[in-house]
Image 1 (cartoon, rainbow, N blue to C red):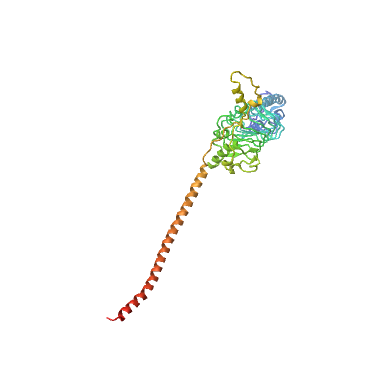
Image 2 (image 1 turned 45 degrees about the horizontal axis):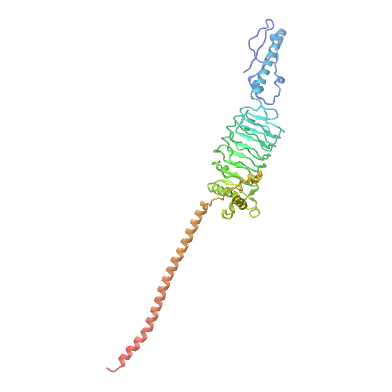
Length: 414
């Protein structure tokens, strides 16, 4: 729609709308929308608007009034554009895509999360930057965020509450950072999380519990870290996980990893997919796949031996008087929890192995029965043929004897 006006030369009053010409102010609605929505315009004060006046229609005095009128309109338009940019603008050094509600701030050398992110952002890319730490409530400006990519930064620690408020987050990528450990309730505020990638860090230990049970988590990746053990309780808190990446860690395949082996067997039997656990120690199993080591070959976990004989003798020798013993050292009181674990209970063979054993046993028994039946039939047939053969020979042997006896009887005197 065109906004076209002319001013009278004598009255300086607004004339009736006229047809567009080379000397008239012309501003279309499409142009206005383009000015408001174009992200390439850095300063609205430098917007050019074409205008002109028809001297024969309006005159010089009207041109002066019209110029003041247009200057006010342009100033108002500039203010509106600035307000719109501030309300839903794109941070500097970032690229915003309004159609997909995504913001790409990757490869910009950022040291922190941009503070002026659009509140309707659904996907935020912060990969290939220099972010070293994230404070609590770091993403409060984007409560509707669903995908967060922090790949290849310098994160060494994640503060508690850093993901607070991201109730709709589904994909979290923390690959190729410098994380050494994770807080036990770090992901407590992410109930909708579906994919968590912690690969290529320096994580040496994962807590038993990382928040509420992840009912929706389907992908969990911790490959290429420094893990030696993984608690089974952590995996049991992910009932919906289907892809599990554990390769390229420093797995110590001893009795403490037996529970992980048994859980993985059940996980694979139910249709889960994993890239395997390759043992790094001890030397007996180095380079071997954890799932291919029979659990009967693991040495049982025992309590550390305690030398109590001398202390018991001292107690018996000094029953009537208290003898102060030497103070117990701090290192003696603090025991490695892995050394104090109970011997694992023996568990029946895996269900898959049991079914296979039953099938093989049935097949073998069937073959043996068939062989016995064939042997019986063969024996009976052989016995019948042998008996028939011996019967024929005996009949032929007795027949000449009978003939000789008959001739003797005939030749004898009456």
